Figure (cartoon, rainbow, N blue to C red):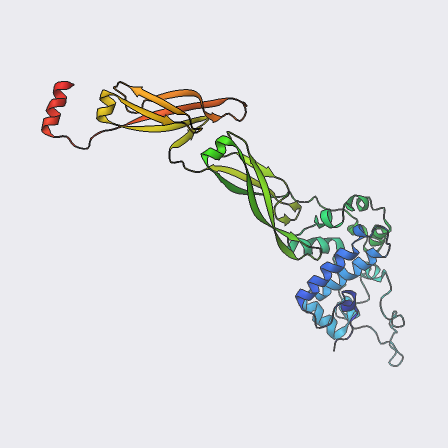
Length: 359
C-alpha cells in the first residue's frame, strides 16, 4: 500500500502504473490543461501545474519510491518528517495537518523561503518540463502550432488569467517566454527520370511515408502521394521543394526536396541543352564514305551521307533538335552526331603493304 495517492489521482492513474503509463497520462493531461489552450479557463494553469508536479515526481523512480512510502510532504521537506500533529511530547502541530495537505500556492512560498527544515525541493518550471518532455518524444514546443490552433499569440502577452496564475505560483521564471523554435530540417530524396521524361515534361506521382504525432504524442505513420511537376528541359541536379510535407519534428514539419537524377539512355546522352548521339564507323567506311539514318529523340529521321574520309571524334551539329531550354520557352539546344571510328585490331602483311601503297 502507498501512503497516499494524490499525485496518481492528478494524472488519473493507479499506483501500479508503469513508467510508460505515467508518461502517456502526463502528455494527455498537459495537452488538455495547457494555458494556451484554455485562455478562458482561469483554473487551467493550476491544473497544468499540478499535473506537471505529479509527473516530475512519479517519473523519477527514486522520488516515486519515497513518495509511495512517506507521502508528498516528506519528499518536499527533503526527507525531514513533519512534526507530530498531536499533543504529547511537546510536539509542534503541523501547520497543515487540519487542512489535509498544502494549500494552493504553498509550494512557491515554501521553496523560496527555504522550507521548514532539510534541503528545500524546487519543482521544474511546468513550461520547461512540458517543452522538454515533448522534445524528447520528437514533437517539441511547436506542438502548439497544430494542436492549439494559433493560441500562442494570445498567451505571449501574458494577458490571460491562466498566465497570471502561473506567474503567481512560480514567480518570474515561468513567464510565457519561449525560446525560438529550431529551424525545420530538410530531407532530400533522389528523383530518377528518363531522358524522354526530361525532354517532354511530365507530372510524377511519388508516394511518401511521413511520421506524425497525434494529440497524445503517439508516433504514427501516414502515406501521402505528391504530384511532382517536371518541366521540359529540366536538368540533372535540379531541386524541387515541397514545404511542410515530411516528418513532424520540433519546429514543425520537414521540407522535402527531390533532386533530379538522369537514367542512362541506350542511344543518347545529354550535354547541357544538347543531345548527343554516337555513330560507329569501321575504318573502311570512315575512309571511303558511308550513309546512315539517325533518329532524333523526338522521332525525326536525319539522312546523313558522307563521301569520306571521316575523322575519329568529329561531330555534326543540328541546331534546334536538342533538349528544350527551360528558361527560354520555345527554344531548344542542338542535336549532335559524334563519329567513332573502329580501327582493326590486326593487319596481315599483305594488307599493310597495300595500305602503304595507297596512303
